[in-house]
Image (cartoon, rainbow, N blue to C red; front, side):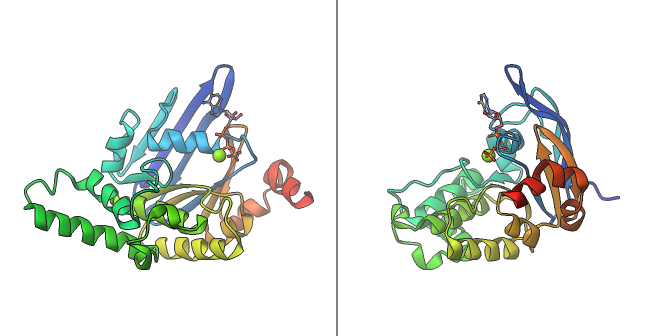
Length: 251
Ligand SMILES: Nc1ncnc2c1ncn2[C@@H]1O[C@H](COP(=O)(O)OP(=O)(O)OP(=O)(O)O)[C@@H](O)[C@H]1O
Ligand SMILES: [Mg+2]
């Protein structure tokens, strides 16, 4: 059987006495959209930090594209194609949209562009940045100041920045948080389209979006995965209903 793109084994992180991720194991196949859901404080963001390399794990193993990346820094993980939409390169409001994307291209390919003459280097940067913007349908905003974008457009730009780093796998932590109905529909359509070419780990509280987008869903409760399966398997899983979905539906 083909090795999964991302394989997480028995990952743990404690803050003092609090075991925030408590033996998390799951895998993500190439071009899969794998959603991780769970109540507030379950450890989802912490898990994303551990996968992106923002936060060192206490123990456990992370393999990506056939390589053990557990001990690698965030920069080294980005170079291998693992990018987090938020915080990896956050948006700089004072720069234009395309400058923001170009900085991400540069972060990845600074060394591979080393031998190009400045003019062609700039053209390459520009072309790649524009391609990432076109992918998230922000190319018509390229020369606007990033600070002038709407909340939803900023989320789109964050995804473009992750794409511009050359990511194969995108870690998206609540991309729909704080978006209005229309903005959220745009982002869901964008993720649907990105699924064709990218592998995505999506953390999201919006269950309609999760069930519409995910190939598989894992449910994290108090730092432990209590279920992994297709949206339908997870929706009807008794423990999940008791621990999480039931409580949401009742709310
Ligand atoms: N740096 C830290 N130091 C101490 N405790 C932390 C730290 N980061 C997170 N925690 C705690 O770990 C637990 C899990 O937090 P985390 O942010 O990973 O949850 P989450 O599942 O992303 O929640 P939400 O759905 O609200 O975003 C919480 O109890 C939180 O207070
Ligand atoms: Mg969180």
